[in-house]
Amino acid sequence: MMKRFFAATLIFTLLLIAGCGTASEEKKAERLPKLTIGLMPDTDSIPFIIAAERGYFAEEGVEVELVPFKSAMERDAALQSGNLDGAISDLLAVIFARSGGFALHATSYTDGNYNLVAGGNTGISTAPDLHGKEIAISRNTIIEYVTDEILAVNGLNEREVSKVVIPQIPVRLEMLQSGNLAAAVLPEPMASVAVASGSRYVTGSGELGINPGVIVFADSAINEKADSIRAMYRAYNKSVEYLNHAPRAEYIDLVMEKSGFPAPARDALELKPYRPAGLPAEKDVEEAVHWVKSKELAGDYRYDDLVSKLLVEEK
Image (cartoon, rainbow, N blue to C red; front, side, top):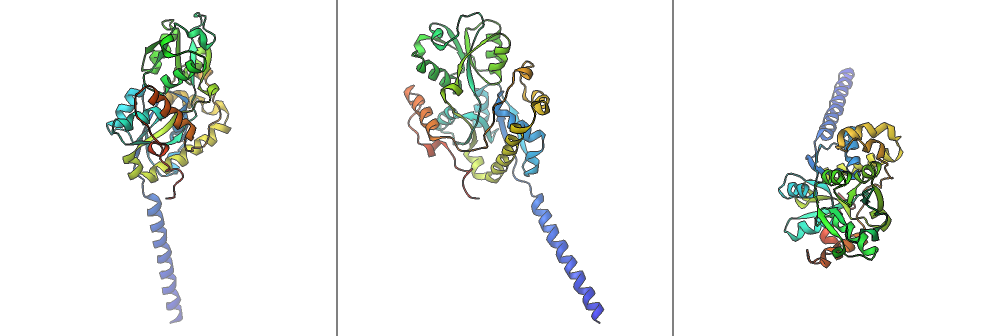
């Protein structure tokens, strides 16, 4: 009788443990909603590439589709048409989207640099040398913002140079390399590729302390996929940790394969340390808003109008 009692108790306990294990496994197996994120051909994309290829997104239980774009215009059109949940972007794009009625917020800063590069035979070695010269930009983007800040710091205004609008970054680089442009503002690593092929670095956003680059998400994604976005950022931070400590030789082939960078970037690319994800600085937001207002492109916005605090909010 006692043996039967212990046997029944043992069976019940084993079933209970098995049931708990099944429930735990089911919970672990629950998939978070998929995220689709737009990338640009710049160094801000690299942590996403690493997270995908090293399995960090999978470790955090979130599926992330990465979609490459060559211009901010194409990226923004995809965001506003609902084909993307989020993207590598900038504060200017957030302001323009919101002023156009599209609900979008920045969720973190990025660490990319935007540099002014001059053709090797143009005689341009400092920013004041740009007077009367052509500069290739993309209109109403982080590129034009950085360009105007460079001009202002060096005592020039935009009427004293000739802005040539070339939205696609690879085309801008190619035209500079072919001698069809005096200068261009390019993201990294495209600026370093230009320098490696004979162009001259003049100055850039890093020197000026300008940091308007951000990761953005549509409000619909923030409201409906908040847990997925948090999981994405956990994976992103794993990539940052990896990139800041791994030997360059360990990841450069993968980055070149997946990024769409031109072949010379393999030797030219030098990554500066990435920061773990965090909220954009109020100073960066205020300066971006000031620039947009000064050009009468949009109205006034406060920090909370443009930046989501999803990263620091409790679940």
